[in-house]
Length: 465
Ligand code: 4AD
Ligand code: MG
Image 1 (cartoon, rainbow, N blue to C red):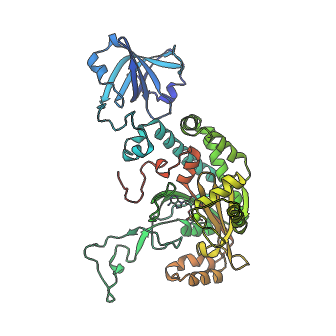
Image 2 (image 1 turned 90 degrees about the horizontal axis):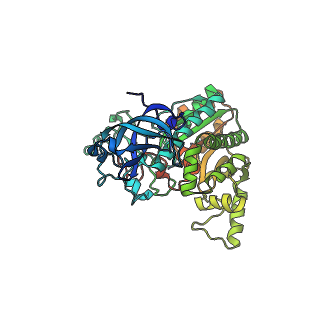
């Protein structure tokens, strides 16, 4: 038997050779004498057409070749007379590996809505749309490593189980081996975590940043890329309970260097997608969002706006004075909602915006404090259709200021002594940011719900598979 050739490669092969393809049947059509099978094996959005001379095959065998069935086909690769493909396979052998009951198959033509497909997320990678999204996701993961590798950043593996709350928001999933039906208690009646697996209270991490800073202040420039967990009960199209985050952290970078890197990074990724995922992105563009490609090209060539938060608030207040209404109130000191972020990006500037110098009270303890005593050197990158895609800052390098801020927020210094040591021993200016991988994918694929750009989404009340 000929060696299997992937469909992606077959479509580029010259006609006039015997080949074997393996994959899943997308469709079968034809007439009394001839059948046309569209075969896909996940290597590309495109199918290879199989032409079957029905008189040469057993009827019972052909009856098993239905949508969804897993098959092998061997035959001659010939130039296609029909339009739509350059080459096709004239089948001489067909083997059915696995039949697919057309009635019970969860992927039916009649319901292909994203909502429905989420209920059969175990099968949806077989659809054209999710195949395209998952290939783009893979390409973006590779491009992220390539970008940092070319710049000499060290890929640092930070722990998923942690005893500290980096963002201070308390939205953490607990990790424990204690018997929840029979919890050990101390004299005060509190749960006795000294009896727990790690001897202390632990959770799944909300960010690898704190450990990332340890790496950056030793290796210079590092990045993390891993799963991140948030137990926030937000059922929005932009939040997952388990998502992937990329967190570069750089010694000797100030906030401006940090913004430059963030902008270069996103543009690199968008360009990489345009250059390397053409067929998949073209498909998504044609099928769902015919402005996708122009939006991607726009971002790849545009200089992002850089604007202090205080200026951003003025613009939003002016917009309200001129009749724009928002669902959530906005004024100096409030955290921006996605609708405000999108107003700035989509209505006002019509390009990505990096908003800086937020009020310290709405940002995390580690951010560098500005001289005004009110704001910190934070930076959020805001994107069309999404809002915040990156959050980052220059870090507070002064031991005294950092400790004061921790005390002011009523946080415990004890569990953070290891982190504070970076400021005690050879503290240097440094900065970093976090890019939400799925938010990036929303932008690059044009999808509008974050559940549709991760293979197996984890959201409130949903942990299937
Ligand atoms: O703004 P965040 O909370 O920043 C941090 O965690 C910092 N420690 C990053 C750093 O400076 N190293 O999160 C960073 C990004 C957000 O901008 C967003 O893109 C994404 O992570 N993100 C989420 N993505 C999906 N679901 C969620 N629940 C998310 N929460 C944050
Ligand atoms: Mg943020």
